[in-house]
Amino acid sequence: MRIVVFGAGGFVGGWICEELSLRDNIEQIACVRKWASSVRLARRGIEIRQADLENTKEYQTILTGADAVINAAMLPAQKEPELVATLYSACVLAGVRRFVQMSSAALYGNRIGSVDESMAPAPDDAYGRGKAEMERRLVESSKGSDTQVVILRPSIIYGPFSEGWTVRYVERIAKGRWKGLGRAGDGTCNLVHAQDVARAAIAAVTNDIAPGVHILNVNGPDHVTWNEYIERLGDELAIPNRARQNAVWFRAMSSAAAMLRIGARFNSVRSLYRRSRGATRHAMTGAKAVTALYPAASELDLLRRKVYYLADRAAKTLRMSPSIPLDEGLRQSAAWCRLHGIV
Image (cartoon, one colour):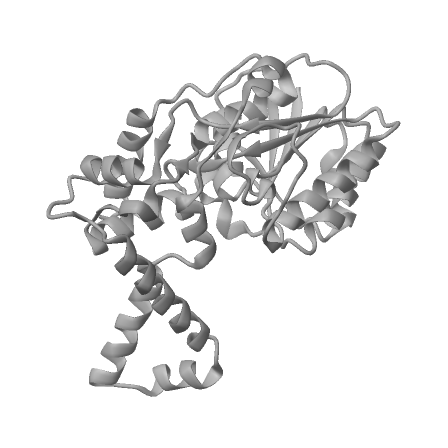
């Protein structure tokens, strides 16, 4: 079976390619936008091609003879709907049997409670709106086509190589001595390990599934709050002298960090930083550290949101369920962060 993976140089794409490399009956082509992002894959002997989704001239050569395509490329929200629709059309012309597209549970917006795929998207930011429109275009394009579409909506993807939900939180725990966020972190942390997401994507291209379009949530096996995630990750890292944050103080500092981010966008501020020395440079560096330590308003909303993305449909359709428990995922994450000098 010949599988083409777009976005192979990214976090999820890299995991997918590594999992595929362990299977003897699969020939894969890993497509990266920049050669610099191929280091992780090159040591495994994976065939790598440079391919930018905005350069459609490359599609014919890459897709020739492909049985399936997995698109895990990270794309700008405003461009993603058109680029994915174009890639899918190229797959149809090339006779690709199945097209798997990585989406996100972010398109559900600020819904709370138990959320399944029967609920309409309700995005509340540009990222979610881009995903929702991409899915709509893709489903519309698939009507009457022989190239089957499977769309996966993962929740919070963590694990080794995760900049957003592992490295960023490890750094915050280490620098801010976080043990928890009080009421600010009482929301549900829908964690799913990257390896489980990769296995779901591979199952979506290799398993026999019913005809038609399938849209599937992908979530992990543990139900925890953000406070529990932060505390257990800090314990695994063995970071001492941690304390639970005061929720009011935490929100105030997050608001201050937001103002600093706005100021940093101005050319005059960036120019001042480049020219500054001594105490001024030190103060500005400290301000920059504050912006990294405290989350933006959208992330604060996420930390408080009590929602759980049901993944029963994926388990039934793909005949597999995420199997990496949080304890194991945290152990892997902490070991990887230590190995790479993050802590």
